[in-house]
Length: 433
Image (cartoon, rainbow, N blue to C red; front, side, top):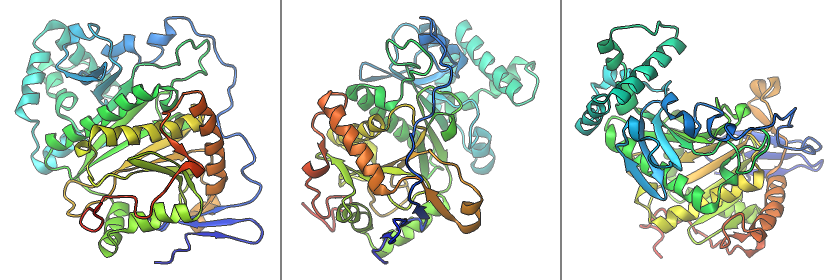
């Protein structure tokens, strides 16, 4: 494959090619000189109750989401919390079923004969065995039925049968505690990934990794669990409240299949075509002992890419230090962008049924432009920022954030980075250290 993934034209246009997907993107001069964040229009003042009850994801409205599968409290994951005990501890992050699944429980039943594991069936029975738990479950089912255009009224047995996805389904949400930053005075001061303390963000990432592992263990028919985060409405978020989504699916997807085919031809491609190439183009933004961050190329939107250096492909099998290293760079990337920039956070990792190693990597895509007729007709995407523009914006901000101790202090930035060749160790059989 050609190594000309980036081409600078004499007029300043930058042509980009993604080595894994084949996506083409151009950066045209003069189109990126504008603020990236959403403009704040008529912010509304907050009262104290808004900090805990502004939307259905807020901590004082926990009964408006389906029953809780797990929660993170002070760095510890707790399961089996009953409806009447939801307020007994303060959850830093909560894992609940998505009320509207992308791949439904009925899909797995009808196509694969799936049934939830026995321990989840016992949890279901225990939860509805109390009056508050039963009321919570019935309320959740009625809410879903009404939103789907069906009547809320039905026999209790029918409603309970429709509650199975809340306990054994494969589409979960990881919900943060805060809607607004501490001390916020108006509704524009949202709490995003980058506004968390680095330690708090590390808990979010560790909880998400553990939840991904749980979905794989729960459903043997799912070769892949998609993990992503939509931040703000232009990026597809229903609520401007920090949350991630995990979806068990029965396919890898065409894009990943094509990527795997290339991986079989060149097992070292993530080193050669991603990190090493980014280093050769001076696109490295930051690194630490176990992860590296660079400005991506060949994406529909300006993108930051975070790669794990670990020799272990599965995030849940990595050491706590390796997971923390990824968290610190993901957090720093979000903090440098700021909470007013709409973005998608996409996780990529080795599918459960793949016989080859590949690195865990996370893409943070800034949704700062809209696709239009030119893109649809040519399949060439126009980005407002070149990878070097992205690098410069993030590096400058990241130095200031580190000085203010708002991101991890052990992060190396820009010229401080060493960036050894073949620094990704995902294929230990080829690159022993």
